[in-house]
Image (cartoon, rainbow, N blue to C red):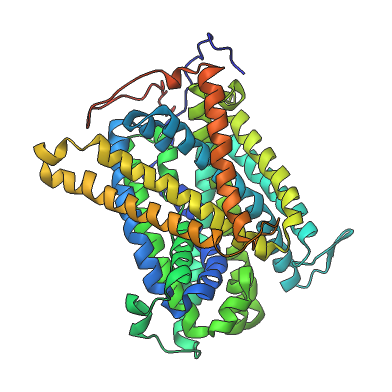
Length: 502
């Protein structure tokens, strides 16, 4: 850790990421194939055939938050994103908590994403006739085997992330193109050959959505599957111009919305509601097998595996950029600011995020079957995501409030739309929290227990407050020093950035 009086040297990140690279990173972070392969079954279990309209309703507030990110990034381009913007708009306490939430959400995702990658790997090996890898049986239902294989994947993507953002982004682009081609092809076949149900206009009717807890849960889950579009902003200091981050973020949102709606229609065209729910995290391979036999199953499993690995890598990259921003403000220790001497990546934070996630992956073995853990943690992380995006929307509305009188047309986009989106997301998260709190009368260390699911995000916030207090009063980090910013006043990034070598 750095001492309170020690000034950290400026960190330098090479500007090597293009708009296309940011798009590849953001799409990989959303992980449309893994969201389709895993998330559709989960959402179908609560929303029924109304999945398409659920995705549309979840997209609208995400669009409003994307607008807030665009304007905030213009004023203060920084890889810390909401962690920095909320400090400027409100207070360092809220900013710190937001950064902490982003990091914890990423770590928790990696904790179950790695075993999921292991499970998909074992399922693929099983589909091509491999029964064992040395002493390890190829059993996708074995939590221990899934975790071991998943941690090997986590090690690989961490090494690639340390090697360089440019290499990681090129890898992401190849994976994204490959998986979209496979999923798109299977979707077309499902429309042509599927016989479970014809496409119905009622699937887009919001009046037929389930009420109460089912509606709130399905919307939170749908919001969660959009999570990650903002990772293009986490490399804004590595893009050639901050506007490229915004373009990549918006393109990602519209692209994945189209993919989600297309996949929801295709799945419901080819699979019964019972099949959708029962197949869990292997729904996409099941669809491939049903449509095209073993070749379809292998292709679909390969796409799901590549998407899972791509998500792991992109989350490692985005999380380490947030910890870099926090580390150079001395709200985290010097470990998180250590750049690789050759590649210029935040190697210290990248490795630390991976190690913590690996430990949590092992601990998660005690929570039950992998599918149960995924469903539970997705709900818990969904609450944190609602909080993160909601606060970012409020930050834009407050920071640019002066435009309400000076530039009403611009204020409609920069103030009103983000504010409405933020209120929706925060209200949705609060409602789901209340529903889970009243769903049971006792606490249990179980991924299906409502009190446990609420305890996870609450624990993140309480721990974040304690760390913020320590950072403010003991370490005396300059991040907590008083500073005010008028609405729409540009504040340049404090980071010194070097141009990429041509």
